[in-house]
Image (cartoon, rainbow, N blue to C red):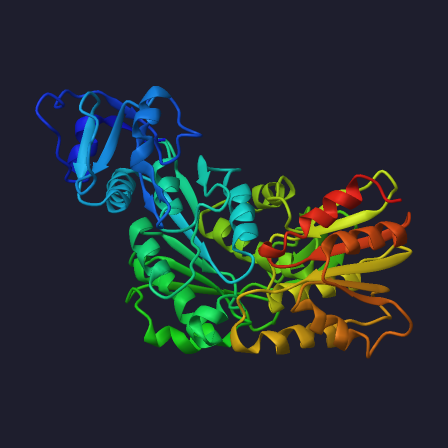
Amino acid sequence: MIKRSFQYVVRAIDGQVIAGSEDSFQIQGVSTDTRTIQPGNLFIPLDIGNHFDGHQFVREAFAKGAVAALWQKDRLDPPQDVPLIYVDNTLAALQELARAYRNELAVRIIGITGSNGKTTTKDMTAAILASTYRVHKTSGNLNNHIGLPLTLLQMSDHSEVAVIEMGMSGRGEIEFLSKLAAPDVVVVTNVGESHLLQLGSRKEIAKAKLEILSGLKSGGLFIYNGDEPLLEQMLPEMEHPAEMLRLRFGSATNNDLYPTAILAEQEGTFFQLNTENTANYYVPVLGHHNVINALAAIAVGKYMGVQDADIVNGLRSLEMASMRIERVLTANHVMILNDAYNASPTSMRAAIQLLAEMKGFDRKIIVLGDMLELGKDEIAFHQNMGRELNPQTIDFVYTYGSLARHIAEEARNNYAGDKVKWFSDKKEMIQQLKANVVEGDLVLVKASRGMKLEEVVYALKEGVL
């Protein structure tokens, strides 16, 4: 974490202090949340929306161990008996402090974005690089205009590489994040349908993802999914360094890096690449799409000089974030694949494919919820998912939500009997699942985050009746 003097912070953010607050002492870390504040922290109160203003928690922050705080000049009644730094805007000050700190560290930044798979790719990349370097990575979902500065400020003076995830909800956001982080390498995992509601088309989504190039250092490396033609089509319109290296990864054999063999097991996936190195790679996650994510991570590792054996070992040591095809085994020997963190047509299609490919189970059951923020074609996207469900590979279909109803309606055209069910009540769906699921079954759960289908996983884990 950042360890700098009080006066360093004042200078970095062009802040002001009142007379008597000029003495220098050390800041150890920053916090925007009094619930997680640590002794020695600089507290940064943020004004979030119309219902929350962090300035009202400044005194509490000091009581919990903060040694200084920022104060926005337009806020009334600042406390007079604690070290405050006055700024025009506390969020902008947070970002400027992160920029100053990042620029003075001898750290190489890997920036990762994409519609799907960016968190998985971040974790894979960090696992590979950690075999050779002191690595810092984005924690949780700290990937926006607040989270990314906090991530940079969490780096230590000794960090050699930082793997930074960049998310967005609209145009211009990733450009800002990339210019703040100034990455040496950038990765675009893919272009999906998430944020169609905000951006209107996949072309605009591709442009938004390509904004990550705007902060790439001259001569840096651009690693991107070569199976997505929109990335190369939109590239000439986007700001990017005049001098940059490029590497394409994907399933197709015209990419620079592609898999030549894939073997799926119940706990992970083996694969080989089109390289002179004939190593057998293994990732402890499931799905062809995760092999493709691993290719991007491997490309970063090779560029950063990680030895092939260390890349293999790094991937094997991977620990995934929860609810991203997380394997859950119930006491009744039912296997659940918890992929309830988020969903888009691209990721849901990958989940359907994964379930179809899994072997060694008596029956396969898929539980699907609404895919959100898909814009005017949201019904058509859900209908298409229903058409792709095949009774030869998936035995039962359970859907929940107003949009997922269209999945069920289309799936019923493929299934006989009562093997496709739609629910408007999650508790009712859970009850019927518990009554139907038996030992030897495989259950996959997938939906957008807002549907909270992890509740289905937790209920089944407690015991199938």
